[in-house]
Image (tube, rainbow, N blue to C red; front, side):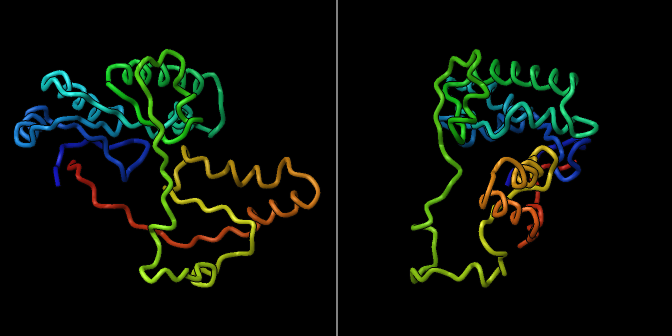
Length: 212
């Protein structure tokens, strides 16, 4: 566990913005002697990873888990697109591509995700899905668990959403689309999705490694 100073995040109280001290990062690098540096974000920690790449002369990989629209949506006052949000998204896109191009490789979770950053991206990109192998991660005895009964799930069709309930996650999109385009029997089926929301569990935030 590594602790780093942080400053309050005005957009997400539970997620303070890390402000790592270069000296502390350098001490860790001297102890570990890494063969590769991995950056998980494009902010201050990502900048430190890029600095280590240059100082240590080792390759660096960055994983991208956002799209420019996330930031525009978060900063939007009314949650809708406007000139201001589009400008924020353009600046975010240009900054991100410029930042990614300083690494040896960029990792995206899907091909659709990668396409958001194609304009100007020169570094190789790899797709690593966030999905998991259900045949491997299952009960030890191999017996399928009756998940429907355990969690009292509503009838099919269903959409499972696992994430923070934040504006940038746009959980309203599948809710609105479920009563949109489909016609005939499909339209009635998709309406049922938004008609019966079921909150299965509330996971507490993991203890942060950032100190304020």
